[in-house]
Image 1 (cartoon, helix red, strand yellow):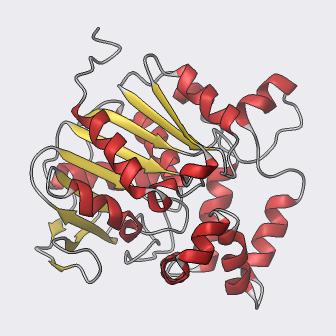
Image 2 (image 1 turned 90 degrees about the vertical axis):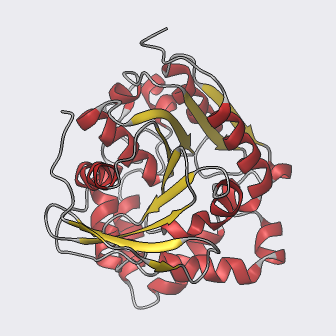
Length: 310
């Protein structure tokens, strides 16, 4: 599949309240949903997708570094950040269609597509629907091929996937998120994804990150988590044929061995694992933004032939 219905309207936008030099813009998807994106710079497009219940604004350090060099676009998937939260579409394939519609509407080509955490699932879904259409490179940041265990798996399969949830775990997580003290549970759960040094030294930034996380209605966040956690992307990963940078971290909730396995499945993929002393948490692009941005720019600038064309 190489085409989709374009969004019906893209707004000119207004200055973003947090990211200097960027615009906060909206477009209407083909199913009538108002979706927010942040747009800055000119030149080769770099499109960024945040993780589960996160927002496009959390890439503000990347906008600061990449905005003067490229056109940087970060989308709030439906229900996330400043996008509308409709009653439908909380699955990676609808969100991948939203992404394609945005790129068609803006006429973005030769895109470097960056996904973080659950945003990686949108990357895999995009590949299933559109393959390399409008894309030139992928950057896959810290996600596992499936989050929920399958009792039928061999130990080899379980090691490849590195599941986070076993029997009943996902239900307990959902119940805690929806409980009266769900906001405090969100803060506690999110704190496990950052280093102790970040929580101590950058408390104000962490508080802002929680505010961005809580913009997504909790019931919609749970709907998306259930929709994505049981999907096994290993077969899709093995079909990717684009220059790819795979990034993980020693202090992440996703196992380094799983991140290494993902890189091994994509021909020619580059692997970067952040040690703990380099801000190597699930949010290494925030904790060590300077190093992350330097390496992202180096990958974008690198002359690399597509594996299927080499």
